[in-house]
Amino acid sequence: MDNDTINYIIKRLLKNADYAAEEAAKEPDNEFNIGIRQGYWQVLDTIKSEFMVADYDLKECGLDIDLDRKYMIGK
Image 1: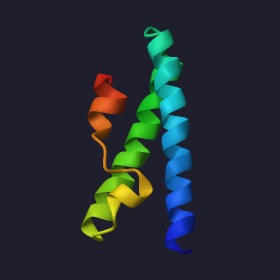
Image 2 (image 1 turned 180 degrees about the horizontal axis):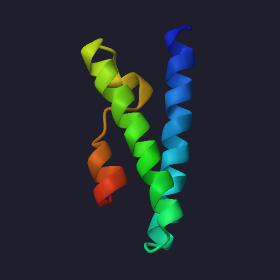
Image 3 (image 1 turned 90 degrees about the vertical axis):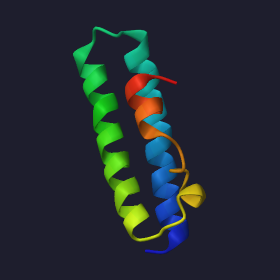
Image 4 (image 1 turned 60 degrees about the vertical axis):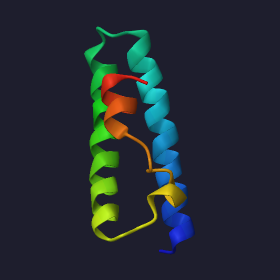
């Protein structure tokens, strides 16, 4: 798998995570939506950590952001 494909997949995950965060914000008492948001955060955080260890360009794939602030604390 080349970097372009990896970057595309990560950007799709980020887009889906943004949608999950929006849905969770609409209904803060909906545990299902909150769980989906947390799941995306956990996956993206794991990928970001592994990319950092591998010295992968986080900016290129869109992971050069504060995932905790964006998906767990709020924008």
